[in-house]
Image (cartoon, rainbow, N blue to C red):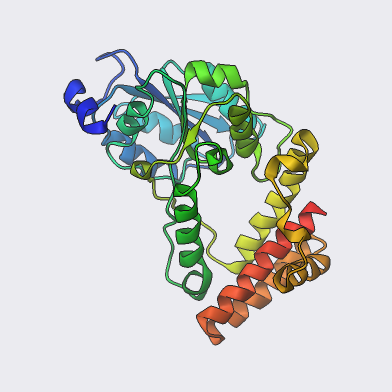
Length: 325
């Protein structure tokens, strides 16, 4: 159902309590140490229009005042918590959020996003058809202005988003991540997130792939952007994330086989891939990734952006390749 028709049908109601209507959606928010990030998300959720929703925040370990923040906002938005006394990982947090959810459409939303007022309504509208779908929204990065962002961050963010919009419904699962939705029935068909993924990332891509294996199309519409306020802001940080993600990719490949991801581009002997593999051979630990990353960050203000882009790309891809080995 188009959003405009959906909003006319629902009367563009602004939702501030759970008593007004039955719930169309549950926004599931896994968080660890999110006391400073959650208020921005909650302020965005307070502005939601067009549909009845609840928010379930799963505190994945009590490490700050997140519980107090949620309690303070509970009189302004329909939010409640599930609390883990100790960190159990993002998969466990997402599964606990699903177990507590009462809405029909289940929206995974990370705690560092700031969605637009029609965010929940748009997700719900995409599930108004008779056939199940998975929905992926992009998360444009909100960057500071620095040498890393000018050389690499902005361009890479744009490339990732545009390439994601071009994916077919059979390939959209590759972008399953921080801003996604399915119905409760579809979630239960796929099953829980796999808690074998305890390092950075890939529990979401694993879940999206399992959704794909059921023959359910995964769409990446342009109307669900939610700005992301916690991007990597340096080559060092971006490389560390790539290194940890590469380690999690090994878990995915052990579970599903390397063929699940298609051809291994790094196996091809182009000059770039040879350079990436050579860089990966140097990056044998977190410490090595950080050391080389700091070196690249030091160079970025002193080289042309085009050169800086190549340096960061080589570092990032090499870090991922190193972790996969």
